[in-house]
Image 1: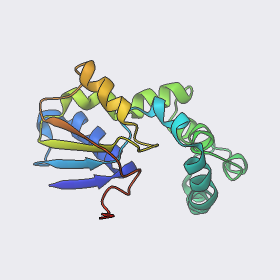
Image 2 (image 1 turned 180 degrees about the vertical axis):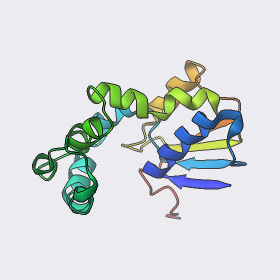
Image 3 (image 1 turned 180 degrees about the horizontal axis):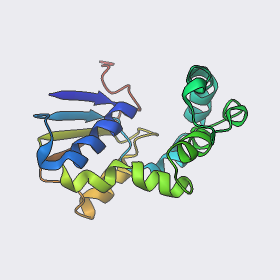
Length: 166
């Protein structure tokens, strides 16, 4: 069983779908993850800014010796959002032509139909990052694989659904 949250759950969901029947995992629970990166930037500019300010700058300074020449480190250290980070790092680092191509290729939604192992996707309705409306669209457009089941919770926000307030 693999249990993953937020960004990690997005990575795991894409992996499970990309592996399909060859997936070595037996089951998974994915909590508060983004299925469609095209919906990601507009959902959380405040979260994005805080993450960029605290985490990304320190992280990128440590990665600088390993980054390809086509990434402008001065620009990276000035980022104010996740979108700016992905445009400055992800796009050039992995050779994409633009952010749209990067999001299309990196989104787990494109491989969701190939999920065959028992997988539970748990997203609160009020999660500003994971976006429950994406799951409703996936259900309406038959984009769920045979092993994928979605659970939309009434509340909990992003990462807060595991705490009880009763």
